[in-house]
Length: 484
Image 1: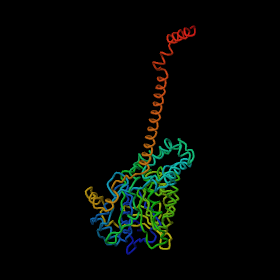
Image 2: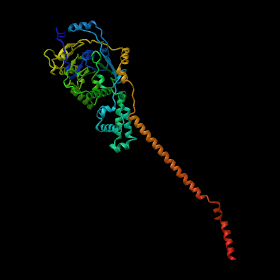
Image 3: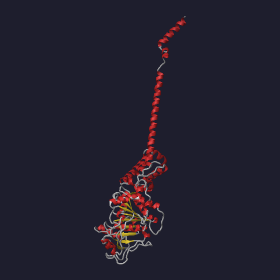
């Protein structure tokens, strides 16, 4: 586009598939068309057999499952950009980490490991050492750590009933440290993490499915009820990225990505996240592209993304920003500096003049070089530009093979049950020993009393023979005998 109008001919902006694992940013003010841009990108990826994972914070992405309806404004737009239009729906899985309906995503505590689990809880080095001891103790004694109640039970055990055992094997553990850890876990539970931790753990390979027509599945994680739970969102995202990174093989510079992840309202990942957690996410973002995974952050302002992450993003699609205040104008100037210099646009001016469904675009070419910045009128999605009805959502979930696989509640014997049994057995043994000791004490007291009674109760004959009367009589008889 130049001067607000599309350039005639075939001036289309195409993005090389092989560069889509270089990550990206989709930014812009509310109502400028970011969601529809994600929808278009997801459709194109799916058509090329590339699965998509979408973090749907606002709940406005599910319509991709159903064909769209051609409207006059869509026809007019596609005539302007000289591009044909068709309607089409795409294969979709609806997923959840909260109480919403969908394929339930879970992970066990043990899968996190002590380092990652400590970072999620934002623990200091001393507290992290206690967590490492807990994981080691559970490994040594075959205590599965599946959910948060398992971890809390072990934490309680090493502070109380098992304190002596732990000190003997692993050294002294401060009760102030265990108390701090417990408070952090309760904070995480209050954001709904008790639903996320547990079995059956989600298999990352189930995100990589292709349907019978060769279209990649669009996996939508419904997150509309966790906007006020940034810690849970950060925990889930870090767990997911770490699991994908550890599971997927190295791809190098392959011709196409294996999976593309869109993270809507990306600032929620970084809000209230500790420095250690941000560093961990940044590290994974840097490394995960070699596994064929592309990550795309969607937010209102590029400044919402930490500089270390922003520098890793190859594709940038910038929708309009609005300058209502002096701070807005400063933010727009800073945003413009994130994009290549252009001989055709005053970026900081044009960025406020873009219409709905228009955006600045810069990508990487096949040699990995950033392309010139261009203002672009985007095509319309082929799928429905609205959400699914509740009936359509229920129908999708009821027909899902993954829902049947993952929505069964599993609560097998783990650390919680094993330690409860151990504590109960110890209490019963202690009670039995106490009862036995009491019985033995009572038996001794009974024996002592019986002996005393026997020693004081004299035989009648002995009593007569030792009486004073008998003795005087016997002595009188003897004296008479001697006199004779």
